[in-house]
Amino acid sequence: MHQNIIHNNGNKLFSFPKKEKLTSKIIIDRLFKDGQSRFKYPFRILFLSDDAYSEPFPQLVISVSKRNFKRAVDRNRIKRLIREAYRLQKEELLSLFPFKPSYVAILYTAKEEIQLEELKKKLYLIIKMTQSDNNTSNKS
Image (tube, rainbow, N blue to C red; front, side, top):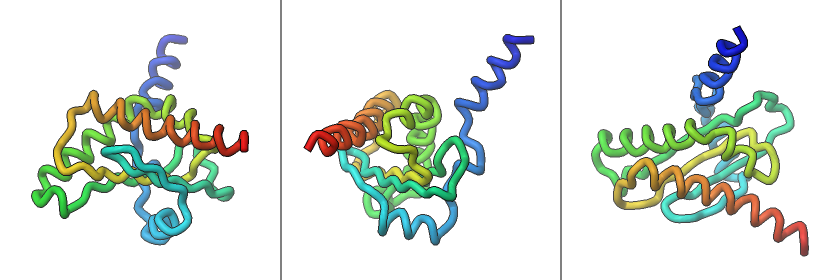
């Protein structure tokens, strides 16, 4: 019985349910206007906290430029890889933020496709960078 509970929680932890997908145009516009931004190749990440948002995980939007990848097949593949990289290390990534974000946008800025393992490393590094930025600003 106890193993089933752990197994079920593990599945929920590594899932990416619909309620974690950011689809509201109003919130996306606010995220781009008011959100904090960090850049580390190949990602630009925007994040915003909202007191009214009470879910345990933030809502996420992933964007790949049509300018860099003309074919929708290529854009969708990259978004799928980024989603997978996020999903597999979601708990660890979210613990790195200086505060609990409500909304997160991940923008892929590279002009070429990168493999999943490399994406996982780069995603971890950029979110780690948000933590170190916060630590240095607190010391000032």
